[in-house]
Length: 557
Ligand SMILES: *[C@@H]1O[C@H](CO)[C@@H](O)[C@H](O)[C@H]1NC(C)=O
Ligand SMILES: *[C@@H]1O[C@H](CO)[C@@H](O)[C@H](O)[C@H]1NC(C)=O
Ligand SMILES: *[C@@H]1O[C@H](CO)[C@@H](O)[C@H](O)[C@H]1NC(C)=O
Ligand SMILES: *[C@@H]1O[C@H](CO)[C@@H](O)[C@H](O)[C@H]1NC(C)=O
Ligand SMILES: *[C@@H]1O[C@H](CO)[C@@H](O)[C@H](O)[C@H]1NC(C)=O
Ligand SMILES: *[C@@H]1O[C@H](CO)[C@@H](O)[C@H](O)[C@H]1NC(C)=O
Ligand SMILES: *[C@@H]1O[C@H](CO)[C@@H](O)[C@H](O)[C@H]1NC(C)=O
Ligand SMILES: [Cu+2]
Image (cartoon, rainbow, N blue to C red; front, side, top):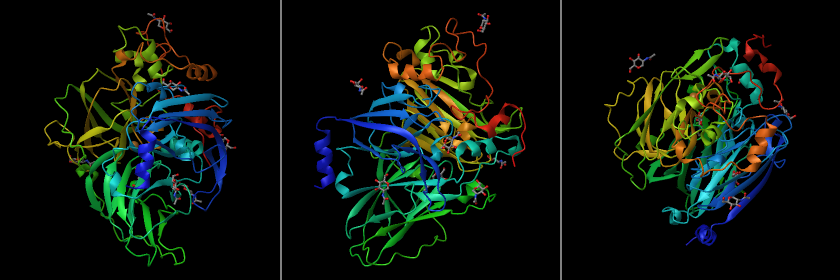
């Protein structure tokens, strides 16, 4: 029995409460070693701390927004938030933005176990640094006996310019094609030097977490095979591979065994998938390298990019519990996605013709204040939220038809879904006749290929309001988001909005009762509901570059 195992057992005998006191602050950092810039840190530090707890523990995060000039909020990616939907984190959905000076407590049970991350879900903010690992140990993890040490590695694209400015250039009439700003570099662990100390002969669990804005990466440990054991927190049958392909927000847990003797050091590579940028850009640093250091006395190897990568296809991974495909389907959500130019010539994402626009009242608060007769009526949630209402325990099928010319990693909050179908690039859209997997892979982010469909299923057994969105942060801001209202009739009287959450809304001048238009007298009167994107404000203080979004065309020099 290894030490980690004993630690886990000792810790979970009684579920603990693990408390984090976090001031959100600006910090100067130089994560790629090439340029120092202001980034969003915690308690004046960057990279951000990992949350590391056991399954079933209570996680309490006391947040104080000390940014001074931006609002914020935290989403705990991949967590179910069963019975705690108020703690899910997206602004305008399950809470109000936390304004500068505001305090807000997140309090929820760590579930499910596995490798996750936390990040801001407010105004395209996380690529400015506000993201960190969230690791939940399971004392009954079937792979516990198979490794001796647990390592975490985050992978990301990195930008030398801050998101408000880049979003101003992206959502801009001068960028009518909607070309996403390319990153300037690729980084590992939000730092410029990652060296794992390796002991010959040991087996390691490496949790690879992709916290990118957009870029997908290939990851390869030179000279060491990897065995995939979990994806997005779902254990899988072991699958051995040379490299993996990891999209934004996805996680892969792999095992690798160190060489029997410490005769040399090795490197590993995270290589940005430049095909996502169509060759438009010269990305200064497309590859990031780290080291497996067996002996610090020996030299570090010379790094190079392998001629090609041959990653494992995640669609083929079989869940460890072999949960069969759910069915029969009782409700289908169809998301036809495409990008179009709006009335201001700004390239926006649309779902069934509608770009996401946040409602006046956060969606969960609408569900909690609506009369019982209206709570299942999607109308009250506003057409801008792209609402889909499902009833308790229904088997729901989500069909994403991608009419765009790029591929997109789609995520749903509150569930690990079964990926029952994923078409190859340029193949016919889902029509219900294609073959599905009998034992589908389960995860919480899945790639949807260009000009094709991906289909997933889940059971609606987690009442709450959950976003379904592309995890490319540019596309979230361009409107590529829908809202799932999962059994909203079962929330009233069960869920209460904590007093500190209501206080933040008062500070942020956001109403907490009423429909999407803020009407609390007649929930079916949607007069005044937001339907077209408003001027960007990036939080509290207007960002000057972005004033054109209201219709005024500026020439950006
Ligand atoms: C907020 O302040 C930080 C630190 O001074 C600065 O780097 C950042 O650009 C500001 N954000 C906005 C939206 O003005
Ligand atoms: C967290 O929630 C639990 C369960 O509702 C409650 O007992 C506890 O007091 C809360 N803790 C904090 C710090 O709010
Ligand atoms: C950083 O990347 C942007 C594209 O996103 C590019 O316009 C800019 O020139 C790059 N900066 C440098 C110094 O290469
Ligand atoms: C990488 O980041 C993780 C999580 O922040 C940290 O625990 C670990 O020590 C880092 N490892 C290295 C080699 O930098
Ligand atoms: C991380 O996700 C981005 C965005 O999908 C992707 O381009 C990049 O290749 C991913 N990185 C890895 C290591 O897979
Ligand atoms: C999309 O895929 C279909 C096949 O399903 C193909 O006929 C069509 O040409 C593709 N469209 C583009 C723009 O490549
Ligand atoms: C609907 O709401 C608008 C704005 O609040 C109000 O002016 C209008 O009279 C209402 N209509 C009805 C039928 O209540
Ligand atoms: Cu996207």
